[in-house]
Length: 364
Length: 273
Image (tube, rainbow over all chains, first blue to last red; front, side, top):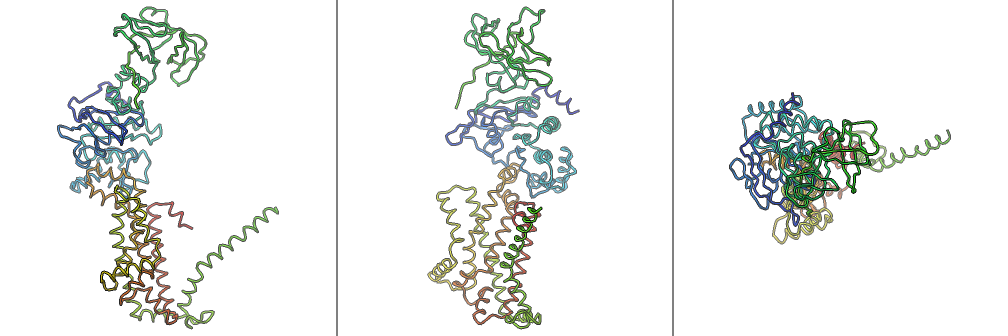
């Protein structure tokens, strides 16, 4: 059941059309170091948006600015027509799931989940009912009276989620909530988190450095690099149409081919193909799975290349080959597993799969 | 075989060594307690004619009980003053930035290191200058101010261990700064605060040097005992000392239990057997 809802979400992409959160030209420095530069980003109602980036990209800072734990040096944040960035964190209808959960050790699981409601002076009966409902939602009802120290990391994660969602926020922020879990539990939680998000219909802003996680869960990915947005798009779009060389390399695995376009012909390391892009120096991203063994039947409309196998890595269902081609060109090719790869191979790819990307400038 | 034998003999000394250390530490206390039951008074060995007379005498001795009450009053007041000033000072050290912070951090520790005589004498001179009449109030002020450093250091250590994300989580869940302080910060500091309170209480209860300078007409217990000792030891003193010892023991056990129950194994290991 869980798996099917996940499939559907990937197929439909961005759901809501109304903008919930509007981040306008936000900038932030710590001392002399700029951490965020001119970030503008809209998040739709009910959307699952992932802020993806390496450590030091500024993704956690952006999240903390939305939550209200840091203030932006410049720019504005609006939520549903109201200025958000001038309000203290406790007035924002935004809740956070912290990286290490930050559960209150002196309170039981039920008291942790009910904290926000108690502070808001909700009636006792209602608190009890909503806490029970929230615990049932994350399948933790049996642990209501436990102390956080007595439950496992995965369980603490669920409680942190319940504690945030019980307040019915407009927006839920998640700061690398899965990074402390081991690989199997992590994959399981990715699926659960995604289906939970569909169930409650609240917009999620999820911060991670793990591109696979981002691809599996998100409606859209905002890729952050050195404090600037590199690209914002759906996982499929960002994978198949990366805008920059950095994006192409960070999301998945790619070959970058450097060449030139002249009179509608792209030339690159002895290869050439017809292209509709404008003349000038060019950089192409070519995914390893888009290069295949040459097939006599498809001789026209493809680019052929020969290469000698220099390295081979077994990945289970597929195999990643490193080939040395003419003019020192190295390409990675992903193929179905086969026993013996040897010597030279004749390969081909469709020109449409060579996606032109912008150079990613060096910044410090 | 013979190697085993040698090992055994070598390790045979260690228990004896431990016994000697233990005896050195506890024999005086045991003697004190045993002689509080001795019918012959403080003289005579071995103790003979076990009796509760000294305790009876003690319970009839109003002057001693008055001094015990005075000491309790002073200790409770000193705890209150030290915590009331020490907790904000620790918070300032932990999270505020102000000029002279590094100096403040060192200076706040000074009264802890300073000999009691100096603290006592300087407070006495201050009260003289200010024309304050010496009484229990001056002792309370003396203990309270001298022990602020204990409260500050204990609570500061607790704050350093506190996960700041917890306070952020509280703000995030809708609690304002004040509510967060009472609902999250203080409960997390509970052990540090109780620890500081117990320590200050104990230090104040047996403090002599500072009290000696600031005493008015009402004696605290240590000064009462000290005054009586000048007229010769009576087993009544042993009796009150034994009661204080048992009382302290109970406090320590309660404190230890509390820490173990709150799941702080590193401290349990420190104090454990």
